Amino acid sequence: MSASLKLARNDQGEPEIFRSIQGEGPALGRPRTFVRLSGCNLHCVWCDTAYTWNWVGTPFAHESGKKFEPSAEMIKLGAAETADRIRALPSEGVVITGGEPLLQTDALVEMIDALREHDHRHLVEIETNGSIVPSDALIDRIDYFVVSPKLAHSGNDAELALKPDALRRYAQLPGAFLKFVAKDVRDIETAAEIADLYGVPAPRIYIMPEGTTSEGVRARGALLADAVIAHGFNYSDRLHIHLFGQKRGV
Image (cartoon, rainbow, N blue to C red; front, side, top):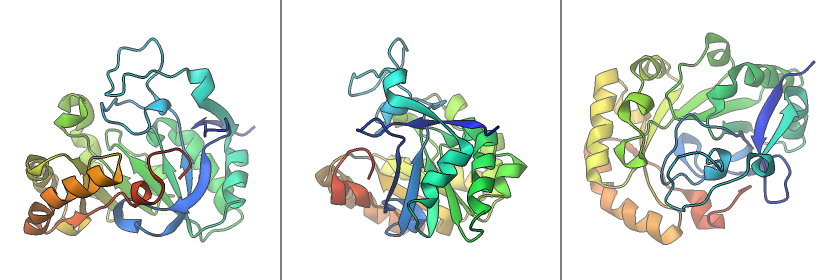
């Protein structure tokens, strides 16, 4: 029997599996099929997918002040059926995002195997907060990890968000990139300290401005650009915000 995945729902109540343009990180601008999973072990105050974790009755803070009903926002789907739905939206790669995907590692391994049973060429990428050590089985199946360690402005305690064992493991993987959400230049300095501590070279570091509107992303990005250049890091836009605005399924 196929393992089940907990997926987020789109605005129509269906599993949030969609085809779009990658808006962030090293594959920015490339066509991808996205799978958004539900559930997260961290709770960022500015999270743009709080409907994957900020449940009614939980104590977590979010700048929107809004809580969500799990039954309305989460749906279970078998790993094999999830793979079928991904294949129905073909692109050169699939992005597994969340929430935090590594909370569902075993079911993800099964889903990826089901996907590649029909097409071994599929690129598979995972977007993760970097606080969970990836299993060897998952590493063997992933082409790229886009790891977004959460800094102090996220509202998460450093001992929860910045796990040395996990960051050390990602640093060892050539296909793992660190993508830091930045509000100001001080965050870039913190990113540089983390990169230096774990030996991650500058070409594998991306700095992305925090923001959920096109105007906000552009304004903050302009303030960060000089520091990004000075450190030799990459700048990541939020292309989907410019194209579609802040909404689900894009």
